[in-house]
Image 1 (cartoon, each protein chain N blue to C red):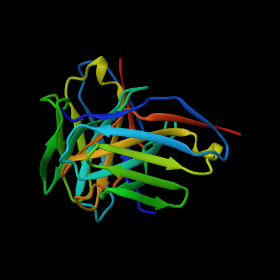
Image 2 (image 1 turned 135 degrees about the vertical axis):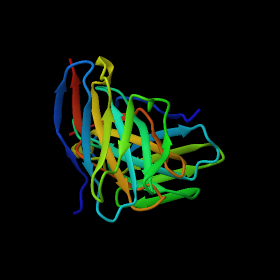
Image 3 (image 1 turned 120 degrees about the vertical axis):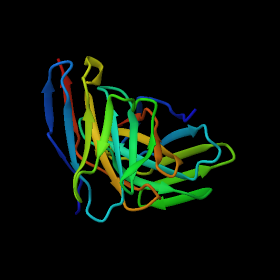
Image 4 (image 1 turned 90 degrees about the horizontal axis):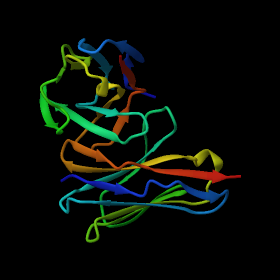
Length: 113
Length: 110
């Protein structure tokens, strides 16, 4: 069964530091997403990416965040100058088409101290 | 506003009963609707999707969509303890903007 792979599974960082979360989507998928879930809260949409550019982004996805597809397989989320409230589980997801049937990765837990 | 509303529960049903989960959404133009299941500490996993008004059945699961009422539901027949999880309703607002509700926590008691 194809899967979405995320690294690291857990990252601890100091407030103000930059973090990069990495994702390898399913190989024949064309649509890529980042979501976050603060502990005990809802899954929140951050951004979607298609054809090497941002397709949609939410109110949460401000200048602190950026996404990149640096090569044919990786999809990254960069968070600059992390804040305590950025502590959350970050999920990457990919989909084959615009029907948006998404497959999620296991998540990267970010803890900001 | 791109709202997806769910009753947070918890919803508790006995084993073998039917569990009924409901969801409403704000954008009348939405075209595709999804139910995901999330076990504690895990990522969401797709149960089923529905695009057209009416019912769609897949095994013990039935999704129901009423676009006029902006309402989606999920019925789980013959509920099992392994169905105990949080059920997330998701709505595709634009082609690539999919929003989740807060989820309904379901407990199936043996």
